[in-house]
Image (tube, rainbow, N blue to C red; front, side):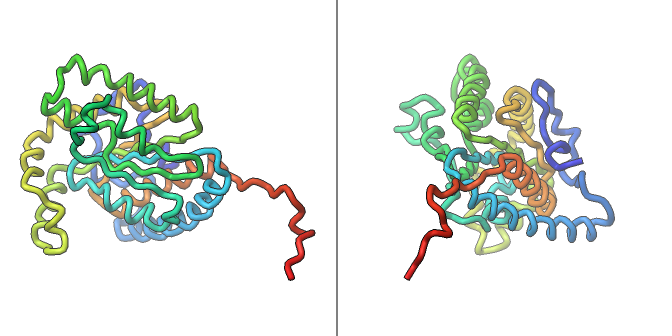
Length: 274
């Protein structure tokens, strides 16, 4: 079974995150050493395949790919960008990280700041966090009334349908880590001077809302996984598995898009270059 089918959230179905082991490695078999060796080898192969497909997508100039990464703090969003997408041509990839909204952004509807960063034709856009923050952190911390955030699921679905109708293929990944793994990653950041900048004391305050975030994610996954914009729940305690699964899904996505450069409107064989 393909990684796409193993991890996709089928439309109109529920998701119970507690029932999904963040350490499991479906789609691979053998000892953990053998699984990791295979995953790392196939990751390299996937990246090489995506390089060619990205060039064709860019040259075709008709469609785009949007990759959405969501997860708890230290879930691996930066690592996914670096290891899965970092090898692609940066001219054809736009990465946007969404932080706390600015006053200007708050003066508009919640999708305004996101829509401006969706990829144009020929491009691959990557969202590190996204419009889903407005049904996650906003819900957990009651930043707006429930009557407001509860209406955003359908608004998000409509927004994603609009992008899909324009030719943007959307793939959304929830990086599913355990609370224990988050603790280990926080401790590793604190122990390594080069990574201490990534840790914020506020991360511990958010950690106290772990169960609330899991519930918020379950609702978003269930209500916003559609044929146009499916969600994938990726077991992410093992970074090598996360990279393999996401790269495998993205490679298949690009292969199914089958982009092709336009044919020249002249006969290349007739060109003579002195």
